[in-house]
Amino acid sequence: MAKKITVKTLQKYKESKEKFSVLTAYDYSTAKYLDQAGIDIILIGDSLAMVALGYKNTNAIGIEEMSIFTKAVAKGVETAMVITDMPFMSYHTDISTAILNCGNMIKYGANGVKIEGYNDYILEVIKRCTDSGIPVMGHLGFTPQFLNTLGGYRIQGKNQEASEKILYQAKQLEKAGVFSIVLEMVPQECGKFITENVQVPTISCGAGKYCDAQVLVSDDLFGKFSDFTPKFARKYGDMKSLICDCAKRFNEDLKNGNFPSENEVF
Ligand code: KIV
Image (cartoon, rainbow, N blue to C red; front, side):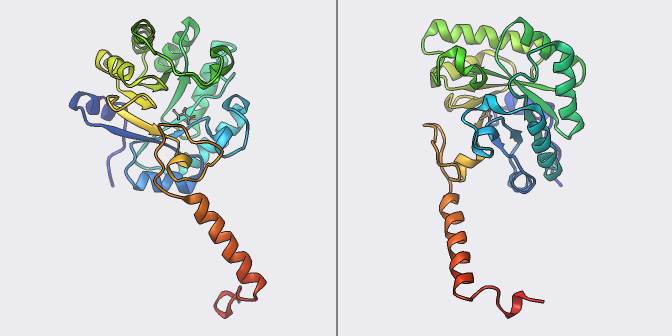
């Protein structure tokens, strides 16, 4: 069996410039297959709100739902690092609630949590989590939980001044103890600038090829989620067609009397 991926493995990847992979999963079987495929980090992203639960944006999902999906994914994974995205308002009200909610994800089988954004309070949450043995992945650039304050889905870090601001935030997150940082929807040059100037691995979510890792939402990669596909998501399959085709053939077979066959009955 392959050796479990830990924060130490990721730091070694950064130092040796070996790229690593991050994909989302929300259920036991998908997590198991991604793990068998050698994916380094499996993220129970709050994107599950939109792609699996049909909500309009990620802010709709709560801690109870993230807990259920964390338990399911963790059961399917042996080697990859399992990270749970802390949902909107699960770590914002006060430090004790934040630590308790993050700590519960570890109890449910996650190996760490992801926390979006940057401010003094977030730094304190990160520090207290790492002090308590909860590894934290940061998330800068476009941070979907701040959709309403950012004024929509907008590319961040578009000029040198904005990139320097993100670098400052990244360094502060690093000081607080994060083991990696997702950079979402920033120009490739900004992704490169941050990656070259921080010690922890950066994970690109539409931040270009110079980051230490790449993350995609699995349902985009599989061609399963079809409401919209971000520019940076590459489709490797057409699961939507596969699902529709299987369902149609099953429907036809049973209507034509071809299902079940003699071999499929007791
Ligand atoms: O929710 C999510 O899936 C994410 C990743 C795409 C970074 O935050």
